[in-house]
Image (cartoon, rainbow, N blue to C red; front, side):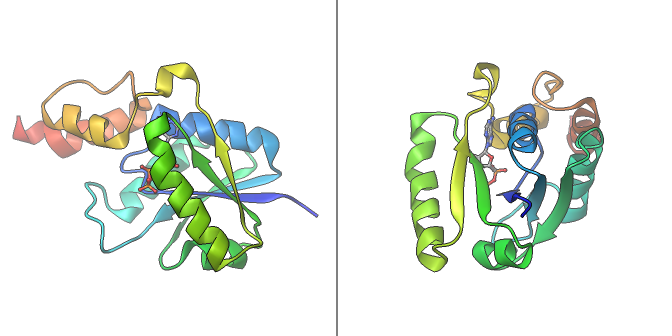
Length: 162
Ligand code: ADP
């Protein structure tokens, strides 16, 4: 049986930290699906299709990774994809509270779905999409934190306001 894992998130935008987690997951699992959430309750800077495009571009060299979007209950989506594993990234201790709560809820909703936490390389520990959005908004270059493609997209999104 092939081991399929879903890595869900907002990816608003995709950062080098997310990509690091995707690459690690791709080495462990047969197939990884990056699930870009389409949650209308959350306000995003980039649309779902823009967020998907950024992931698509970044995973080109990873044959066992796909990108997809989902709405609704995450565990239902995982089941539909015939996956058993949910990947989440853990950066610092402060991530734990929220991530453990999420994993515990998901387990109660479907005990067959296992959450696996992966740790990024040290250089990505303090990297978050919210920070990247903020510095892009303030006119700083984002190249150290995101792929060149995403950096261009951020410039297009915020550049005109400078
Ligand atoms: P969400 O809204 O679901 O938290 P994010 O796109 O912010 O979506 O994050 C998706 C997942 O990636 C989360 O598990 C988050 O902890 C993880 N993550 C975010 N940034 C990094 C990073 N720099 N290194 C490792 N994991 C990260």
